[in-house]
Image (cartoon, rainbow, N blue to C red; front, side, top):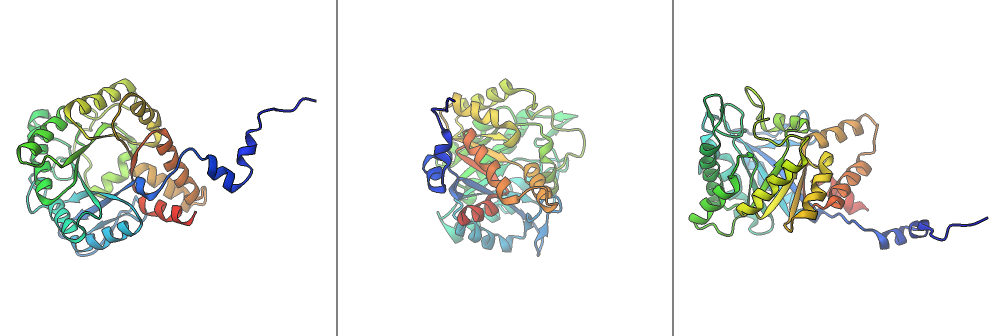
Length: 326
């Protein structure tokens, strides 16, 4: 009888041996934690479709950020829900808007203890629920660029570290970079939602941020999930326009695109583990079908293994607690 000469099980024989040869590591330092802040509310509002996720009143934001810092998470991404919406999304770039107020108070309280990122989009702020300005019956790309640039500058004035355009308008990175530089905010970085796909995994977020389109859909500006080459062209365009960090969104069903981005481009790569990914795990774990801790860490490790340098995830707080236990 012949025996195998290569016994890979030797490298799995004990906990310490497995630690020694572990190829992919995950820590709270890899996470960016989304924070939802809503204007003109006094108490937290639980998001029904996303267990344990809440919309915060402004007065509770610093408390929440303090907990995030204590978990070792280095960055947050702020999403705002305004009390009033209009066709131009004017509250998105209001110097006294909910996002701007949240940025200012976090910066004043915590200084450089956390990286403050903020979403730059219009869907939460427009009465149409679309990510750009409507002209006639379609999105006006170039008018939308002017508005996105104003949003980014207003956030920079409030003290943001990184603006994160997610509207998927052609030329949005260049428009924002030029506007920031013209206003003297050359140190504010841009993390673009570079390849943001037209995905069914966003549904719970639309509940959380109250941003479902009031008519039509977003197929004319978000990337089809069928088109990998088109996604890479989006990433390449953002790099040419001066982006600092690119993002693939969603993450779990797009690991191939995360890996391809890492292979093709020498830039920091972010992945957004989106609301639907979170909601599916939460629902399955609550029904007893999966172990929440085990599957959460497996998913996040797979995103990191695919090539993501950082992960925007609703699991940020729970995963950090899981990792601290292990």
